[in-house]
Image (cartoon, rainbow, N blue to C red; front, side):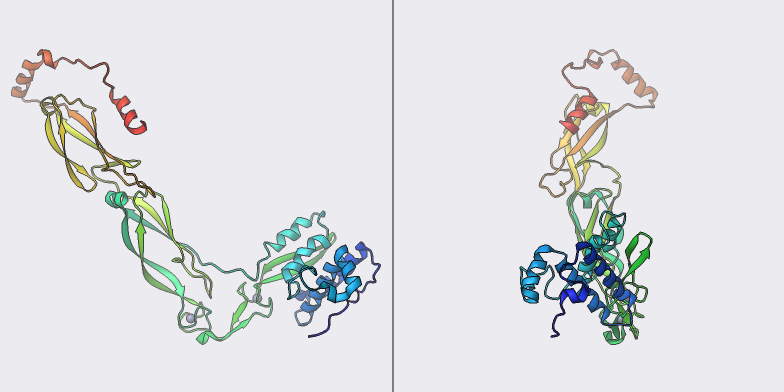
Length: 388
Ligand SMILES: [Zn+2]
Ligand SMILES: [Zn+2]
């Protein structure tokens, strides 16, 4: 291990340097040894980091005092410098730039922006999501269903293991960005220096260069494949709800994690039953003889049929409730009902005979409307059912 150089020597200042001169000295070194300005000098990045570490210590009165007293020995351990064992990372250094170039300048925020979360090296590339529509009938919506969905998605190429190189080995770290995928530029302007970060043009931000392409995926590291993905649709979903299956989307080119498979629910309209929240509504039509005498009829339900009894004297607008014949609550335990809405059919065409029979009943006392004032009208009943 090389011996560490003296911090004052690195920055070319003496022990009594003012804060302003220290900052100037560091700026000079940072610009001189910036890795982007010295692509052919492998020691530049080391010198750049060395300067940053020196500045970090000398700029902090407590650290400076400890360094003045004990030298480098005083800087090790938890009480020492702000950097870990490996010295400062490039991100640490760039996070200093706001200080060095002035946080109160209009560029303070620019510097912070340029650091952009700072996680350039740890960034895991994520592939795109796949979005598909899935049509479900009322029965599937009500009870939940398991489906097998065929999708064409990009999966990791097994020949090269996803890096796109021949046999998975013909790959090198990009020398332009040292594998970070980003290049940083210090630009001199009238107002001072600005740092900008951009995607490395040599490797397109991937940090690696493939020197010989994989034949199976033409260097893309992924291949298009038809997959059958089993999914469990919970009961109670509705039109427009989006379900996601993690990691079943596309993998990005040349390695990374797959996106998600997003399933957008579409509800098929049922011929008989209309959905209203977790209830289903069936419009039943009966003739007025059945309404007057009473009858028993079959009505469709989500899972089949049910027989219901209509009392003699059933009024149009009556709502019968079939408990638990509705849709299961999404992520819950309850279940909606089926509401049978009774409509009494009034004949539109009458034969002479039918007409004469009805004429005889026209003035019959029991055919005179005698609504019960306590009985609620149709709209009140609907209100009770849906909001009560
Ligand atoms: Zn391949
Ligand atoms: Zn690169």
